[in-house]
Image (cartoon, rainbow, N blue to C red; front, side):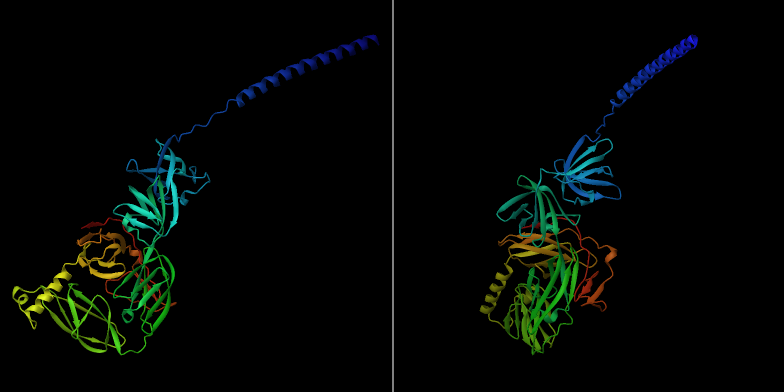
Length: 488
């Protein structure tokens, strides 16, 4: 029994020692492993910022297909193209996230980029630039590069950029009917964005309403004249037409940089014993008589139905006498171009005393001495001043000082308007504009709509194309960039 008890005590002692030995070794091993892992965890690799170059400029374009955007750098006078991708962070000036497609051309932005990769890591709207939005009333002087808004006068930097619907424009392609956003630093404007632009309203079959009035909402109120082309702010409008015995309402939609044709061929006219006559006389300084009575040929006149005689004369030109007929329900346009007189014919007094002839020559001289505006280029385009047709360039017409909108139009080309400042003095002015750009072939099929019914095609003149007409509506793309020059 004693030997067995000793054996049991020996076994128990060995077991306890073995447990202690094993337990001690395990604890040390675990402690060493924990210390190693802790040391590894504390050696975290720091992220390196590779976008260490900074740049500021005016956004000109975002090319989604190529994944690039273009900045204009005013101080350097050059462009910078950078790459962007899904990892590029874009934000507004308050730090809120944006999609890059929310940035519009004309926005002033800062970019952090990698100069080796030419890739942007961050793009943000500049917080150093002020912005004024929704400017609908302003005075723009493109020659002096000033913009007056209320009582504030801003200078427009020579390198300022102008954008309309993503397209870059020249400064004088902004007209008084546009709505603007301007961005600048200090008191200088560095970028202009056309929020709402303008389109064109062309009247078709309007002859019977010449001398009446057209009201396009509250935007345009004007006497109807032959071959007029109205510039109208983009949007939907109720059009009111009034003339003798006529008052009609139409609805039109004006799209930016497009033409809308309003077909007036179905206007119901009252019976009348008289008709309206307009005159196109060259030179414009000629004196005009109808049935022996002096008339101002610059305005539409109302004459009894029937045959009438018109006589036109000017100093240095042969006098012309012709007959024309005024018909019921039709507006007439009489066109006369005088030929320069030979020395013999100009010295002849026909039917007038010498004294009367001298008085007439003095009157003609006064008319010829009036200052003029001459549009020389581009040749062959229709020229409109403040919606009125002035002729085909090169064309000369009487000068009126002040702010004017000059519109150029030609078949197959993009219609363009320019703001010009004409000095109120006795000097002649010569204007030259850039060539018009050709229209895209995507808008060459005309469509005519009468009310809400498609009724076939109609054109006002042979040189009008790419129009959809609505009694109603028409669309023609317009877009061009260029500069205008004026010489006094």
